[in-house]
Amino acid sequence: MYIGLDIGTSSVKAILLSADQQLVAQATAELTVERPHSSWSEQDPRSWWDGCLKTMDEIAAQVPQAMAEVQGIGLSGHMHGATLIDANDKPLRPCILWNDGRSASQCVDLEAREPKFLSLGGNRVMPGFTAPKLQWVRENEPEIFAKVAKVLLPKDYVRLCLIGDYVGEMSDCAGTLWLDVAKRDWSDELLAATGLTREHMPRLVEGSEVSGSLLPELCQRWGMKSAPVIAGGGGDNAASACGVGAVEPGSGFVSLGTSGVVFVTNDKFSPNVESAVHAFCHAVPDTWHQMGVILSATDSLNWLAKTLDASPAELTAELGSVSGPSEVLFMPYLGGERTPHNDVGIRAGFYGISHGTDRKAMTHAVMDGVAFALMDCMEALKAGGSSAARLTAVGGGSRSNAWLEIIASLLDVTIDVPADGDFGASLGAARLGQAAAMGTTEGIFTPPPIKVSVAPREELKKKYADAYARWKNLYPALKQAGF
Image 1 (cartoon, rainbow, N blue to C red):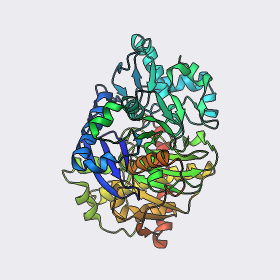
Image 2 (tube, helix red, strand yellow):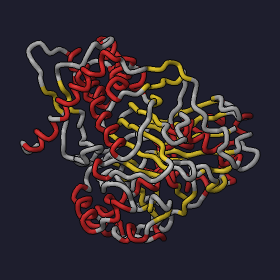
Image 3 (cartoon, helix red, strand yellow):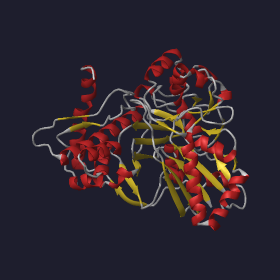
């Protein structure tokens, strides 16, 4: 038996898998995000551990005999969160999350002072990453910075509670900007740029390697016969790739979740900092990946639904199938954008609304706008040397066939939709736990059964290519106008 623990922004999810990767039990605990100031986004680290205890307790109560046989546990979590720990392993302040934008000025300063963030780190210095968050704390909360003993990522704080040791892994730690991504090791120079050293960092393992064993008191609490190993695990997107079997070069996925992602696996480190592509280590050894990330995918549809007092499902059902792009254009930048603009200040908007525009047209425009932003990501990945003929769809937005048809036709890729089941980060985490327990990755990260494949529609490709060319003109026009 194997467990996957996924520390998400909105919930902690635990799943229990059998040896043949069949779902045995699952449990979820909700989380909240605090926004004490504009552009801030924080979370109490202790709430992650409370959520883990709740979900693990629930599974142990559901299936005690299966829980007793657990041999491996894998971890996944939202990336980039700055979790600052004192010498007594206590959080010094709320974790600054991936979608926090307070450190924009620190990003500009760090890029200017240390160009190796772009070469060794392989990524633009963005407010979402961990390093500029620490620089913000250093400048604005010096009394807290002085007490920092360790900087951990969210899932690695949970690991500390599970095993009593400080351990990180490559895919998640690449998102701190302190990792020499090609060498898969901490960079002393990048750490020094934010006043830190290796002593502040956890030791590193690969995602499929053993990081430690579950503490005896937790084994007793959950009725386990012997202490299961805890795998290195992965950042949420790398773990999702493990869940859908995207671990070979050229394989990948498109995620329509709160944020949107185009992810392609590589056999080497391939940065493209000019287009704000994320180039990270994968959660399996000797493998890397590129990601294009947009900050508001289903978040854009959720915002529209809330504004129109409807549900997202109602809006997409009203739209039905599409015969071409909407006449209305939408820029899905509700909280800024990452790929390709790296612009924390840009905001969303509609263009082309007329007297005849109704909520169906606005829904269509929002779905188009998200697809156009994902096309920006695909173009950036291609410029960085990545390509994929097909992608696996994950995330809640993948339930909309119309949305997938739009994206497939625009990106000119076939999109595979897995059969019913959860093929996200929690499954990938459990698979990494299995790999660590078995001491091999062979045969573990298989692609899921496919329910349907959505091919590009020839009658849509030209129409959407033309609409995308028009849409691309909006961002530079708005920036020139001072927005």
